[in-house]
Image 1 (tube, protein in one colour):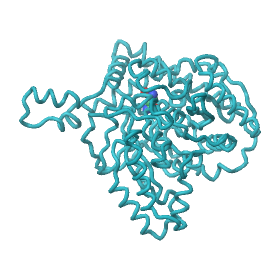
Image 2: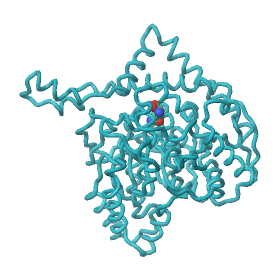
Image 3: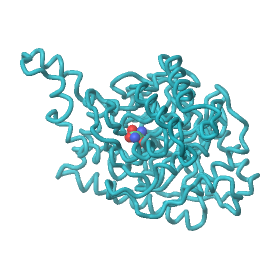
Length: 481
Ligand code: GLN
């Protein structure tokens, strides 16, 4: 569907000897040098590290055994990379160089991938536009006056701009799927616990999952197959056996029932998004799918529940940034005057959105309000999860637009947090329920902005939802910028 070479093709050419990992890496670095001054997808580009890794792949005789041999990959900057600065988009971690790799990064390297750099994101992954990055906003490659979405906006933009064919992001309430939809690429959020969170800088620990981006469903699946599975370093990583998804994509779809939550679509969805979604439903019908109306009665509560639970967990996770271990110490010299200290630390702390979340989270967890807000939110979360369990008794997957609108303009919502939060109406419930979901492009608006449709499945049904997404993708016209 995309206009640039896919990870699958790049790997094949390297394995066949038609090109080298080094030449591929140099081409990716050149594309970044040429284009990223405009897009701002990367916070740091690790040219030397990437070229070293690429040459090491070229020197190997067992390339055919590497699922990502020589494939350039971009990694969201809230995922730890040994020896490479990792900021999570925050001044608080401006000077943080992790001494270890996240498990997903270890697995990327073992698969032969070449990490080209770390991508921009909303600070600590809190946001839907990448404008909460403490560094700079990323621009949408389809229209540079618009946001790429967030919080993994840098990763989505890197794939859409052709800087790297695949990328990792993290999804706490939609941060892989929403930017994928805005940038016209595929984004997968796996089942909670399917991918290790070891080395992912924590935001909402009961919601966070590392997810994958690709131009095609196949590429997103390929990357997922590399990172999924149990991990001794993360006790919440599931021991449920992993079945590779790539092999499933081209198998016949067989009988499939797709649930459409009609009530959720009744208001607030832009007309062009609605039209693209309806076209996707038609394409699935022509692929033999049966469409069934379903009800998710507690869906209207997903946004308030998410924006209580996520800040509560964030306030607890971010308590470690107390100025002792990270941030301030690095910013303050031993002989600084008080004024100098103030000057240098003023910009070294949290940005406005992170402070807002910590305040909300601390408030809802405080003794007088716990029962009224946090406990109540957790109870409604259970009802939301039960809605999904019940729905999956009758359907294989649930389909809905990924977002109510296409990419909005930079600056439009950054001072209106509630408007920003409402954009997550279709994505947060998959995190609250812990189930997997994939966003796949399904057309363009009249302004030529991409629209994404989301396929949500039962826990551990990644293979099936990717297959359903692939069936749609293969019936969609190619979208080019
Ligand atoms: N937009 C949501 C938020 O701001 C989701 C973020 C995410 O998934 N990391 O919390």
